[in-house]
Every structure is written in structure tokens, then in C-alpha cells.
Image (cartoon, rainbow, N blue to C red; front, side, top):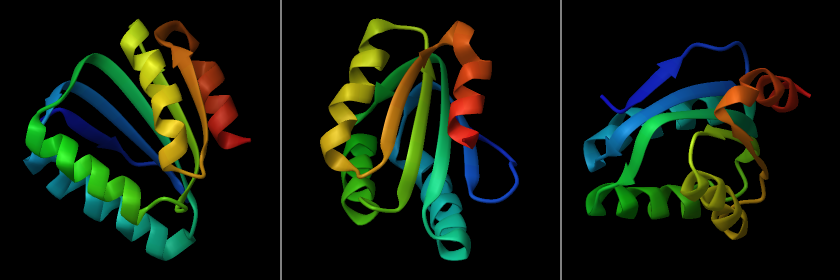
Length: 118
């Protein structure tokens, strides 16, 4: 499964992404996020990408629907990746959310964790 969830306390969700996301992956991802949003309000997400290749067409549609529905539910989004297109993706996401978004290289995981927890 390309999305793995790490249990974090409170309003922080940590996801590890690899491979290519499919529509079925959103059946796991969305309920986790919505449950934490119901409990805490605005949340924070740490997204760690390793050998991540993006979305297939079905997953891209699910991602767009998620972005529209949760436009104001994410307070901070830290993206940890290993390629230039992933860094570009952090910039591309900004108009679709009110979250503060920061990209970190794969060697900056501890800095990403510190920033997301501020």
C-alpha cells in the first residue's frame, strides 16, 4: 500500500507515501483525516515521500475532491521528499489550502518534524 499512517498524538498525522497512489488509497487516507478533523478541528500533516511516483487518474480526482472539502482543515503541511518535482508540488498546492506549507529534503526530516510541531 503506498500510504502508511504512523500514529501520532493529537492533531498531527504522519503519512509515508511510496509508489503511485490509487483511488483505493484514498479510502484509507480520507477517513483517517476526517476523524482527526472531527476530534481536533484544524490538523497538521507530515507527509514523507520515498520512492513516490504521484497519482493515477482516479487518485488525482479523489485528491482534488479532498482539497476542496478540506480547504481550511489543515493548519500546517510538511512535505519531505527526494526529488525536484516533489518540491514543486509543495508550491503548486498553496492555492488549494489555507495551510502553511513547507518542503524539506529527505535529509531534513528532523527539521520537518520540529516545524510541524511548532
